[in-house]
Amino acid sequence: MAGNEKQKLKLLYLLKIFREKTDDDHVMSAADFCEELLKYGITAERKSIYKDIEVLKEFGLDIIYTASPKKGYFLGQREFEEPEIRLLCDAVQAAAFIPNNKKQELLSKIGSLTSDHQFGSIKKQVYIENRSKCENNQVFYNIDLIGKAIEQNKKIKLIYTRRVVSDSKENEYAEREFVVSPYAMIWNDDCYYLVGNYEKYDNLMHMRIDRMKKVAITDQPARHFSEVSEYKIAFDSADYASKHFNMFSGPTESVSLLCDNELVEAVTDRFGQNTTIIKSGENRFTARFDAAVTPGLVNWIVKFGGKIKVVSPAVLTEMVKERAQQILEVYNA
Image (cartoon, rainbow, N blue to C red; front, side, top):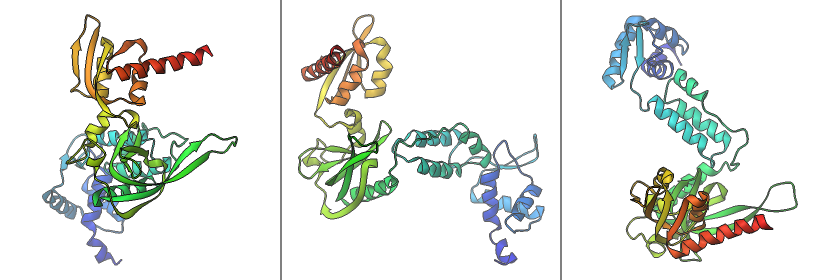
């Protein structure tokens, strides 16, 4: 590209420099900008930099001038603040369904939303496990296709894989084809699930998206969720996720638990701030909420040992007793 043609890109490169090289701890003078522009083959005078900065400010950029400790300019407010970038990085790292190579790509993209200096500091504090929890690089492609299928109200066809026990030292998997009406995608316990209806049954099922292969949108219209769930007008993902533990399907019932006072945070974190909390003596409280009575709920209760007692429903009481008996039998064998 000829020199005069490159000059047309001067403002764009100046914006790029502001975003990548400046923040409130790293300012640049007009001379610094001229030197940085030369790396892109663009010559500039300091006077022109001042005019360009005014244009960028008029465009809406929060460009700030400071005289201490060094005179210069920096980009102030951005689309994302540094704590927000840190939260996004932590969320990506915590997501078990994202392969490690994809995590690195995502972190780099998130890093472009702040300055190189700030992201360098954040990256030092972000830990990426050496051993990936997920090896399926089709995850993002699957998410995109499922999202389109939900929007278009179409069924999807897929191959679902499950790990099987075998004598081989190599990992072995069983594969099965499904045709599913998709309703929602929910992130639960660091895994990403599809909530939908398998065409052979009249209920909802959950499928790990990272276990899917060969996802394809079909021409068949999806079955309406009102035929297989309590939702009639819109599928309420937030409500559904709050009632179902570890993505086990099951009937929703009114649950009452007698808990030690020290568990009030754990209970409200798990069931939401709208959980009814009633004092029951000096050291205990009763928690009331609606939830699916499933193995996931039983597992959550059992992990607190004697600090939680099921008051109702009776079916949940029996499920917890049965689980406790199973554990006892293992150790008495």
